[in-house]
Image (cartoon, rainbow, N blue to C red; front, side, top):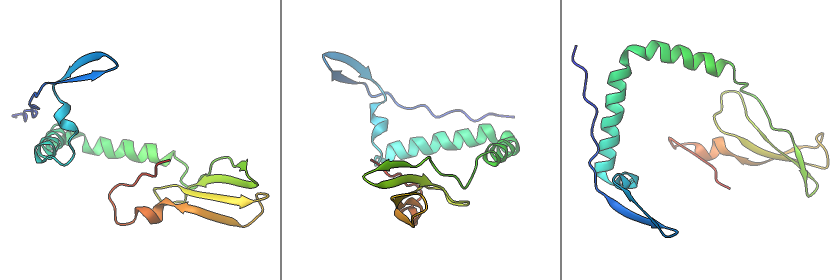
Length: 131
């Protein structure tokens, strides 16, 4: 059985200077997310990985199910008090992203949802809330 050969990224050396130190990065070009060559190279790497790992797909799925079965799906952080509000982050069963919440005065107060990342993430393949 022939194994696929991995793609080889071209080397385009560039010298980077930081704090008086020079270093050569031959793969700096790979950080250009919109460059079609970068996208093609990453796609080739992904295809290669899929072909090499093909015979482990069942094991990968089994491991994924094992790991995710041990993660509590409906969880929340410990609330902390700031400016009269108890602030916490919670997760809901079946949702991928956090929900940022607060309660005024005590934890028996009505919940105010500040940011529901699941709502903001709708329609996108990836979502990340920054600080």
